[in-house]
Image 1 (cartoon, helix red, strand yellow):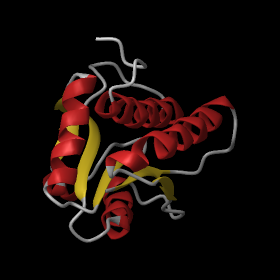
Image 2: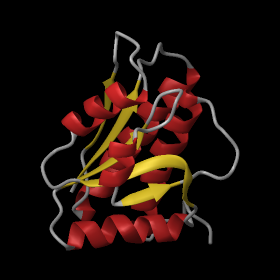
Image 3: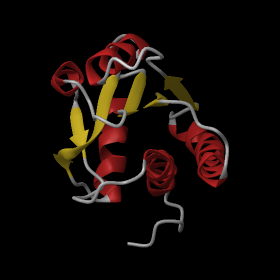
Image 4: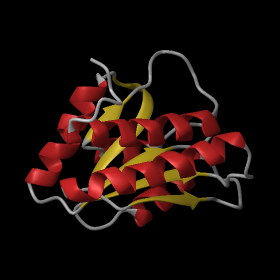
Length: 156
């Protein structure tokens, strides 16, 4: 099952972008034997600044057919890392070919994106900077693979 991190906006480099690249590369190495991967980052941008609705259209257009959609949203559920890993494994075992983690723009996700979600996930009640949320999502993708592989990276 391929994993996609779809994010509104463009990264300008920097330490957060380096973290995303590193964790997605680690995911690819760890996850392939598990039937997961590759992972890729796809950036979408509404250059006309029309807000969450237009960004939502871009996110939905980027979804592969039949993809499991995980929407990162402050109103979502909080899961443990093992529970998140289990969700990915369940979708993989059900034959889903793709899982997408979507990070919205400054105004969050549109109603259409939230309605399409298979899972709305929150990193807690605090608001996180967009680039840090990308890094956190990439790390959790990698952590999920290590949990499924039985690696000592995740200490329960």
